[in-house]
Length: 160
Image (cartoon, rainbow, N blue to C red; front, top):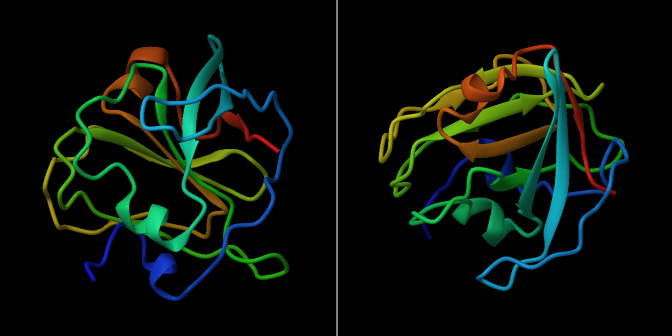
C-alpha cells in the first residue's frame, strides 16, 4: 500500500461533519463522486468551487493522484479532521503520482486560511506542511488562488 498525501491519514483519522455551513451542492463528477460547494470569501468577492470529498482512508490516500482533468472551479476537500473531539493537527501533503500542479489550501478550525502552497510541483515527494494545526485542506488547480486573489486569512465556508 502506497503512502499518500497527508500524515494524518496514516494514523487512521476519520472525517467528521464539516465545521461551517454553506450550500452543499448536489452535482456529480464524471467519475461518479458527489460534488459539494466550498466557498472562499476574499477581498475581491466570493469564489465557489465544486469539489469531491475525500471521506474514506482510501480516498484520502489517493486524493487527486493521476488526475489531469481538474476544472478551474474543481478540486478536492480533505475535511475536517482529526476525529470529533480531537484537537486540530498539522498536516503534510506531497505530490507523488500527481501530474497536475495544485494549490493546497490549509484551513484553520475557525475557517480562515492558514497557508496556501501555490503551484505545487507535480510528482514531487517533498512534504508540504501546513505550518500550524489545521482542520481541513482544500486542493484546487495550481495558480487559481493567485488568479482569484485568494490569500491567507480569507474565510472558507465548508459544506455540511
